[in-house]
Image 1 (spheres, helix red, strand yellow):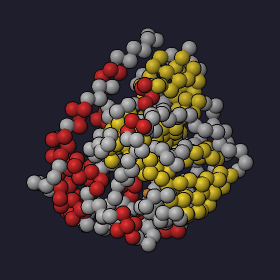
Image 2 (cartoon, rainbow, N blue to C red; image 1 turned 120 degrees about the vertical axis):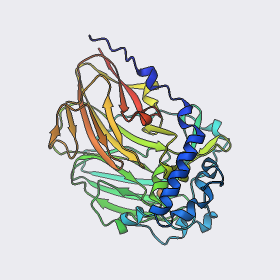
Image 3 (cartoon, rainbow, N blue to C red; image 1 turned 120 degrees about the horizontal axis):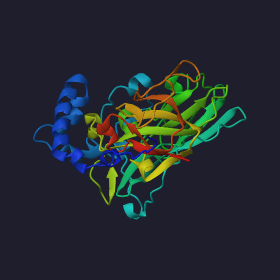
Length: 387
Ligand SMILES: [Cu+2]
């Protein structure tokens, strides 16, 4: 009865590349592109070259419509971009990050992202000075991506504070393309605080999180789809002032990857694929299946608390743990209004929730996006409960 053979795990991990069959994805892309051109003004022109008879979507990558750096549509915007503008599609050229790794992809080492929630600072304040920068990142043994990042990685730094703390934030942009920062934990005038800044410039603002929860942050520069989808996202965890039950706490940020063909071993992000919404990979914390290779470990008797943020940019995360149930799920600010006895709950793109379970049975428990078309593409890991 206590055996946990995880019988379906090998199936879960059979991440066949056939799932991303090029012909299928292209047909899907073309169908969606056609529909999008009617639904979203301005998209038609950007997608025109990808219509029937045009070049394959994969080959367009994110450079579709790309203008030279100094003439990129986004780059010439005097400023972005409040939240309403972010939901629109920017006019003019799009430019995806195309940084070539010095020495090629072979020079880029893989590293696991530690999912452990860092301790909240205790002095009532959080001072963050981050940089928007390009980086080549190895997301699997055989895949290196060229990303826009906060502080050089996907996701950006996982940070932790408490309700009412003062967060003093500065973003300095080191990239030719304008970037910005939108903290979902902030209640603030977005037109000022979340404005884009050009290379070499900075934007600073201060806020006090009013509610506890797992909050996304992301670049809000238009087109926001491209900026989130090219790596500029992360999680700010806001704990309540009152202490929650003692637990081993972890942060999972689900991300989709839409990639073009490799150049010098490095794959660019593909904006047209982002529009098609058919990702190549998904991941918890920026590395597909990393917690299958190196599981998250707790002990029997531990309470485990997962702060789950879905950075999208498009799809939800139907969070589930095989062989377990959540005794507590907080849709909103913990510790208010807990749901009890939950098998699966969907975290929306741009949202965050808190999932808790008592680890009273030893074994290996896959935590998955139970939307398995996405789980099998990498939003999966293993929670090992040790005696
Ligand atoms: Cu950006």
